[in-house]
Length: 586
Image (cartoon, rainbow, N blue to C red; front, top):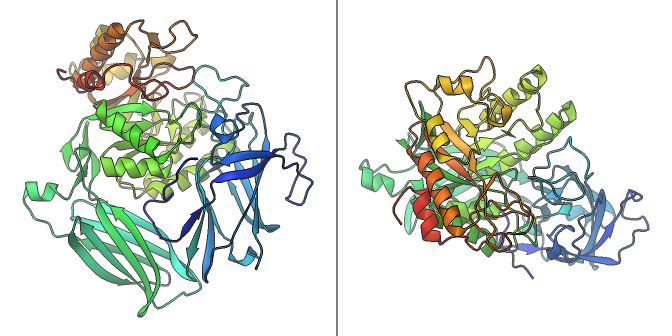
């Protein structure tokens, strides 16, 4: 059985209980059941948090199932206070009953939700928890990412994920507790912004103690009074003023310095809640055509990561597997990943924070345009930004990819409005990170121009992206995927240009005769290595680019264009891949 670590790594309490493991389960293809009192057939068993499509769930059924049911019993936590029930992610629309009482509903397949279930607990008996998840496999008006709407995965789409696919857990808290915690690195002032929101019965007289450490060194020990149930303060760090000493406190992939934190919520001398957390001091910004990390130009060397596993789909088989993915990306010479069409498990972001790997976070797309689709997108994207705002590894937000869900950007003003609205909304929710409005082509409102180009000829690629005077001619003539690079009225204004998808070379050393897919193909390890080396040399040496993102990290179902096989074994020696990625000698 998979071992699970604390699911919310930036707001940690000692008292929690995982509800992962065996649950009763039922398909409801005819949508016959509306509530837990209906005559549901509970004969099947499922291993939560793996989706029923995944072999790891014990079911492995990839058919069309628009509705599923879960049930399990558990013992109520001992002691007083409140009991919170948390779901990491349920795809797509969830309803939750405890002991027959509806305690939560949520729509959105990639973001968490919680409920205070204290009032629904029963005394002296096991608690009965029931979850209904409705997920229409043919609905193209909801954010679904790479989940295929056809019965068999085709082209670049993969098996569906229905129902619970991240950790379900209980947490014991007091009657008043810290509900949310938000960290903001303020690089220029050498400060850390700290926002605390409390919840519960007490509305006044609250204070919070905040302590920050760098290793064993205490950096701050402050007390702030809450206004009602909120506090928003800046924590000043002692600036050594010397580059070498200053850099020791800064987070970057080469030195991922984290600052450990403890927060204590008090009512006078009485402790109401204690949580552990962490943050980091770093800045991401743009200076004309360059991406800047901590105030200095920094080349982005990213790899596209779909975040799927053969036996468990979007759910990692273990926390070690998440850590290993971060380690492998770094071992292959990359300093970041573009998490493609997936809001990744917070445990992945924890390891990226701790081990030093930058992340482009991208919203899973819908594939049809409508007011309903846009409203769903806005809701879920807002929740994703709120969830991941405090992770130092997240450096860029990407609300749209390749005009998916807004397919008529050149002709329809409503489609253009959607991209521009999500771009500006993202900057309202987070003014500290750049935003790519629509990655790949047909750019309008954007801080970085992302270009997708899968030309497999390195010489053509080099000639195309040589910087001869102005980059404007590039935007006049290039048509990747048959699409213009920028929309009328949005000429290139000098923003950084990043080659955010290229390569995609299929190489399947295990079964070359098997039907597989890629943008181009290599038939031997030597040919694969040479083509990868030549493509990466172009991406590294073009003065036009502030960075690149190679497609892709690992083989994913029918796509065999990974640098790793689907089981994460490398197709070439890691040192060879790393040297080519960094444009260095092995």
